[in-house]
Amino acid sequence: MVDLSNFVERLSELMSERELNAPALAKELKTDRSSFTRYLSGAHTPNFEIFVKIVDFFSCSADYLLGLTDIPSNEEKLLPVPPFAPQFKKVLSELRVTQYYLVEKTKKFSYNQLQGWLKGNNEPTLPCLIRLAQTLDCSVDYLIGRTR
Image (cartoon, one colour):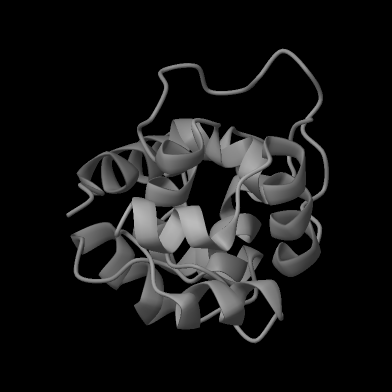
């Protein structure tokens, strides 16, 4: 299981630096304030869309927010996040990784999960994003299209 305790800690730190509480951040991101309370307590994690809004709002690296690096922002410019499905297809192609490898060799993902992501029917959860990046040996920022 993926440990997301760093996410809670980093989100709290970023909010504190800007003197924001959960309701204020929820208002800034035009989302439900009770959700942010649950994120900060560690009871829930944001979906892909909200996660992208958070990293965009704080102009920080997705990898930093997830606790995968201690560098808050890459030196290079962070790009706007494209829709996940075409980005995921692009990453698989660039890295020359097949669905077969992800399903059969790693035993971490199912064909149904991959098909949902590739067809744009849904996006991966934060734990799945981390596992994908680790499996593909790339950063989460690269995986979601924030860096090249």
